[in-house]
Image 1 (cartoon, rainbow, N blue to C red):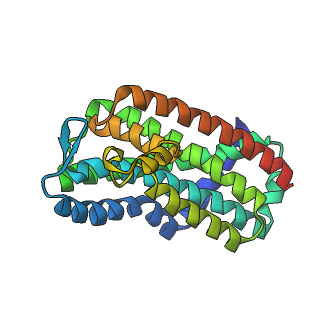
Image 2 (cartoon, one colour):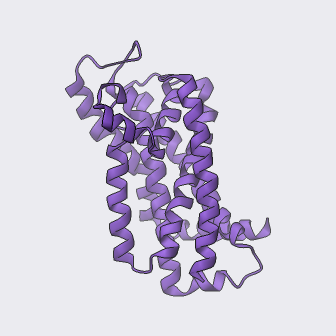
Image 3 (tube, rainbow, N blue to C red):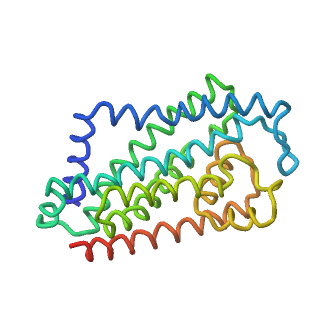
Length: 253
């Protein structure tokens, strides 16, 4: 556990001395929510009819912003491996008396706490500025979901960070994957009204699983049985990504 805390403390020092990075982490989701949410909410007019429930677009999109934030936070944290590799601290860390698993867990533990703060600010903005009706009794589960989502995507993206040596190649792969995943998910639009082929692809996308779970806890929208299945699938995705990240880390050195 001391190894995990040591890595955690280093991440804290990095963020404390990098206020612009901290600003980017905390406020970017709010910009997504306000820019996309307000504009599309006006365009939707009467709102969305989903599974017999009527919601406005701001309510629908809030969970998508939280899921997008998880992916973005994981991307930033995984990119840190390139910075550590360039200045040599990555290899120095691996000589310290801590396991590879502790190294990964220490980095994601700090990011998970950051994601919870980010989530709280985004939900507060949604409630105060956009009048989103949130299920307050499920808020702890939303925070847990955000931490699980951030961890799952961090471990997944870390696999590529360990196996890809060039920054430009990594950025290209991640940016392409990011745009493909977010538009082939339930983040921006309900899947009930999309073509069958798009619905089939979206339902095998882990970003859809995360978004649907967060949406159910935030505003109560969705089929509980489907959400339960998707939550189980994302848990498998999380554990599988962690295992493969460990293997990739061993191969990287």
